[in-house]
Image 1 (cartoon, rainbow, N blue to C red):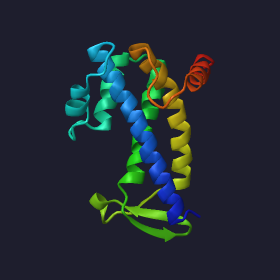
Image 2 (spheres, one colour):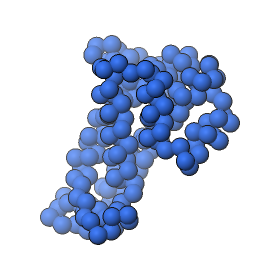
Image 3 (cartoon, rainbow, N blue to C red):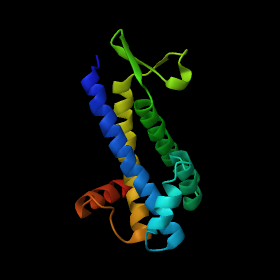
Image 4 (cartoon, helix red, strand yellow):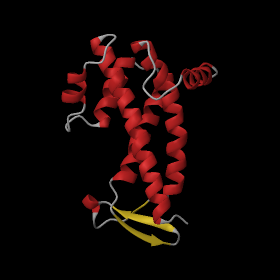
Amino acid sequence: MMDEEKLKEYRITVMEDHAVMEKIISAIITYHYFKKYVNIDFEINVLNDVSVTTATKIRILKGILKLKRKKIAFIKKVKRINTIRNHFVHCFKKVNIDGKLIMFFPYFEKKKRIFDFEKEYKEFRKKYDECITELLPIYYELSGELPEGFTAEQFQELFKNRSNK
């Protein structure tokens, strides 16, 4: 059974990790268009504008990568991470029934949408790790550096895992 504190912990982790992933995607987009440097004005005024959603950034990323069939699963994972993030972030009213939290979305007030947040959190963790493994080498190829907060050892381990697939 999930309690309120556990849900709060999961929400914070999902929001923070999603923000890291979105920042890396934004940097990839920026590096792609501005070659070897991040244009802060572009990132702040365009990519971080309220009208540019994560879904929009994912579509731009897909176009940049000129995806092959084997890459479709990667983009689907990124989309799923975004969906799970939305479940954790946009739910407000909570009722505990039979050990599951039923979350009411403000725009579907009359409908109950039941999510197993424990299961969704585990799925988020797995897909997030897989997506970061895909995104970091792309970021590195464009920028020649690692994103802030990532060590060379982490990058090497991620790249090694990517090469073994």
